[in-house]
Length: 247
Image 1 (cartoon, rainbow, N blue to C red):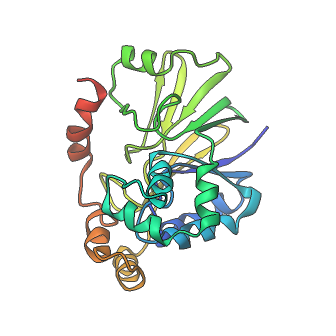
Image 2: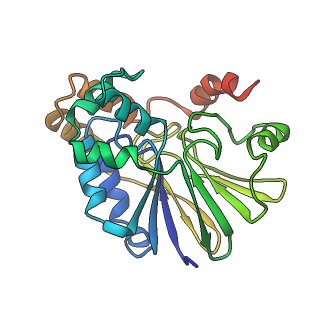
């Protein structure tokens, strides 16, 4: 049984944001750090994966659509985003092999929460959209077939933090470490025995300058200015994601 688990989602290759969260005392002392996908598809992919590899068994990685995109692009099948196509050219073969082998979800026992399933978007699909205000019948569809012992589901993908009950099952989205919608900072969650949604502040100006200076992605400065600074609000994101939720 794990007493404390730190959950980091959607790092998107932003090393300064990742480093800020890893420096948090509650992350440094957690029993396990789980990363729920879209880890390296951004301007600092090699650095982010090397940083996580240095954590050894303390970091457990789950794959998302970003990982699939990087593996496909590395093999010559273009991804839908320019930054992913560029990032795929930067990764070493060992890093690509690690991403290709990531599980789509894992279930672990966490104190106070029971069986916790960690996934990227939903347990059945790494690109499916569910939101804090998704309809109950939508949640029932998404969770169909989940074993009863899974009493908590932790997902990411939409970059907006929330925690809510769905027919007695707790659902948690920690938000995004590297590409937050709704406010700058690195968003994450601490599990056990309850759920804490957390935000780590860091020097965004310095982070954007570091990305612009250190990344060879041609649009690194503009990318960082848009995403690391959180130019898109939660209202913007909900408007875009809403139709993909079946509304």
